[in-house]
Image 1: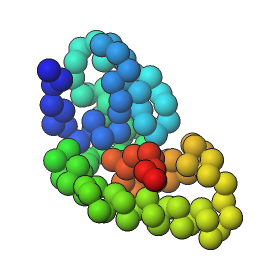
Image 2: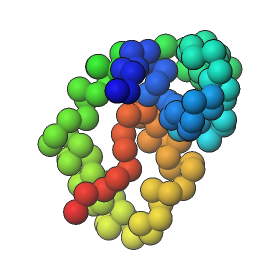
Image 3: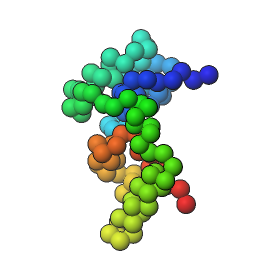
Image 4: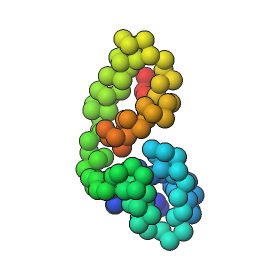
Length: 111
């Protein structure tokens, strides 16, 4: 059974394997040998100027159900009406911008 992540900094990282983490914003790989969040917090503070964030429960409650669908629809409308390529969601600069707005947003657009 997967361990529940309680710290706010997990909203910014993915677990790559048992000993490595990946920053969602800049793809930096970080050691996770000691199984604590101090390295993540230090990276977020020194590289991204982020020093505190909401709890995982608070962030997860922000994007449930119709709210995620609404954001997806607004993103598709921006792409369609602005004549932007769909690949804009793959652009690191665009992803960084969205991460600054909401680090929990997932770019998987559902049809």
